[in-house]
Image (tube, rainbow, N blue to C red; front, top):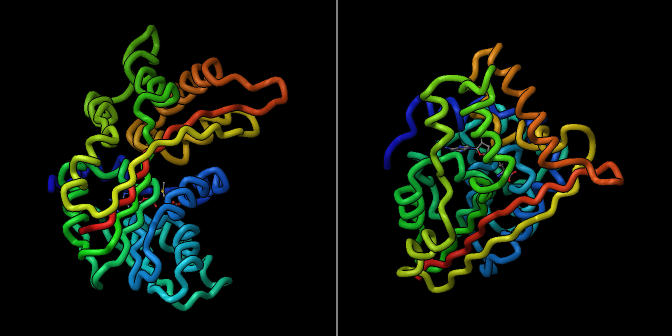
Length: 279
Ligand SMILES: C[S@@+](CC[C@H](N)C(=O)[O-])C[C@H]1O[C@@H](n2cnc3c(N)ncnc32)[C@H](O)[C@@H]1O
């Protein structure tokens, strides 16, 4: 696998802000539940939640399969710390946490399920990542993945456009390296994953869903992307550029996603899912 460069790792994998991410926990939970609901295994023994974040979904996996050992893995110390601290109030003996980077991680136990919700959009080279995970799974085990198909969404197009021409007098903002890093599309179309998994699958379910998130408050879409897709740009810009970029991006987003008559903002968001059971 091609390792993420230090720059990519800085842009994508580090300095997650659990509080910002959890602001939209209810909206973000639904795709995870939709994914979990399609896993056909009845008695998995070892479940890995890859990129578990603050562990909300990891605990739901443990609730659904109480006899399984469930391990939440993530490369963010902040997220893992949050996961472990939330567990303290809600002790489930079969959940544990471990640090790891999906780019080179190996499971310590034989997995029954690799579950990964909203993570692989941060990991490059899916033509290598997905077969590598798939090859770690024994016959009868399951790979279940959800990732946003955000590349073509207006919020993300405007995010890139504002880097290209949102500076003073229509100038680019930030470094060429940053613009090129955020110009890489990491999540592919559904047929890409189908073709990778179909030859060794007993069961393969690939689908997309467009959710209509109803958001509250001012600058609602900006708030949403600040916890996820905008992070590489916020991390990659110098202080002065960051402020002017945010001002212009906020302005453009509010034109594209106006508040409805009732004061809420509708945010259509498309996601890709696949659930494969290994032959
Ligand atoms: C959008 S959050 C999703 C968290 C959780 N899966 C959920 O559904 O709430 C993405 C998570 O992926 C983690 N992550 C990003 N890149 C990673 C990598 N290369 N290896 C492991 N975890 C990674 C981040 O630290 C973050 O916790």
